[in-house]
Length: 306
Image 1 (tube, rainbow, N blue to C red):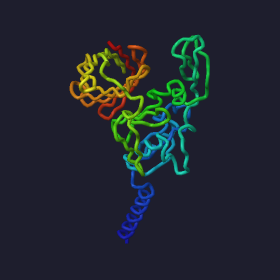
Image 2: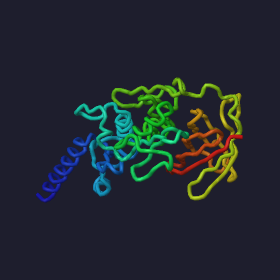
Image 3: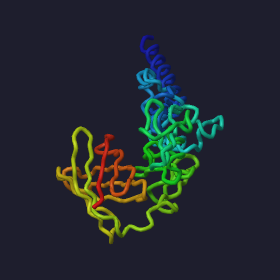
């Protein structure tokens, strides 16, 4: 009798566990949305993917689960689709991001005739003397678009797709474009993105790019030389620490630069990075995101074109 009771109990427990799995869709990952707007600077900050079991821990940081029971691939595709304003929610919202983002950015206009004529900052900062407030209460990407309408490569307007490794997407002229050709987010249905190489603002001539003396900083500064290879339309780069890489120049304009990196040999073989910078003459400075062995780190970089 005791054995029969235990068997019945085991079946009941198994039934409850299976019901829970079926209710979650069979996956252990969830999509989390950041509900604290002061933490949502960009679309990267807005949405996250994590195991559903971590929900209690993440709630303390303002994250709320909005979709449960997914595989990692399904969750990644959903996050990417939401970030480009497509398939955002079952209620049909077209741009959920703008109801969540930090509206503390403002645009400044130059009043002394100097250059650049516009700038943007967070509300608690200013670009320096010679500027006056112009437009306020904006999300970062909207402020950036008003100042640099054609470039669209500021950090808060770009992010790497989770579902398509190596694809950097950028909001340019109101449209999302990808650094990689034939990019499709594997959502249901798939979302096809235009290639930045087909955009009118892509580099038109890459014959006279020059040699770049570049330095980048995470915890310490490392410098190197980027030598342009005109036949391959890429940089052959080497740093003082022994790292070597091929660099693709995705954008080279009078005011902005985007470079993607692939370390093929040396001490950092396997590393990938994206450099986004503002250009003034032969000087460039901006932010860099490194990806290496599953980890992601952010820092700064600068370069001089010789």
